[in-house]
Length: 375
Image (cartoon, rainbow, N blue to C red; front, side):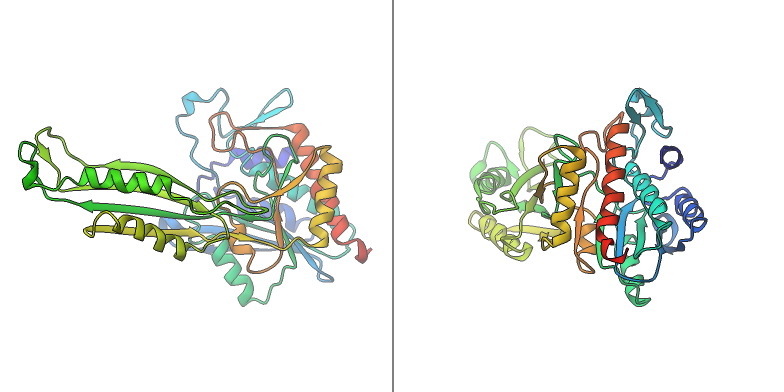
């Protein structure tokens, strides 16, 4: 497993470039009796490699899903150890993607390889190289291809780094939605000495943003925290001190739960802005809708398995950002479970060997549990 991880980390697979990893993984799994399909979608710098590998053809198909792409390392000089080389320091394993999520991919691969000798039930692996960027030609396109080919998966385990305070404390059964807003408030440009002849858009946008910060979207529910709005940018572009600007701009994001749809939230935001001015432009882009998945008997078995192996109090959650689970949920039931997320995307990203061993044990145990009736 660590040999696989070493090779995964060594590949500079900054999204959407897979740096040859799909072929590398395909070669390994093919030699173990898996049927592998490497599919490419998009062109030029958007070209994305994806992989579906399957073993067995009887019974239900348990699929492990994830990605091999990573975010950029940033200034490599700031790293204690080279980002694209696996460094083992004590129990810690450093390298870009060790947590998000090449560590989980190596655990998936080893668990699938070890279980494939049993020939009980069907197991598969579904990977993309464009989860960290736009996702335009990644999991979404791959699932469309699978539907066209009548390839069915019955349950998916997504290996995102879900653990929060302790390894194994969080299993995700849904995700919040995300909508980005761009607001332009228009005024009337003029001289600061004659404010009666101008309309200051800064006064307007401050009032709007204050109301938006006070906007109580909801109070959350059993599995979702309350939705929240964060202002990420306020721009005027005024380089002089004696001119009232023509317009002011702001950008903000709302992470929302499944109590309200994005359409409802966008309508409410529009109404808040309109209370202060009718001369504005509000643009919105929904990157994901909120969702939760049913808790199946297998989901409950999985929680018990994690708690037993990791020796922690494990619970279900929907916290965090978006993931490819938002696409997979339309094909089959799923859950998300992976490593500790505290160093994901950071300089000196690392996981722990102990955590990897626990994750492998959970994945392998989950396969046995899912296919126990096939034995």
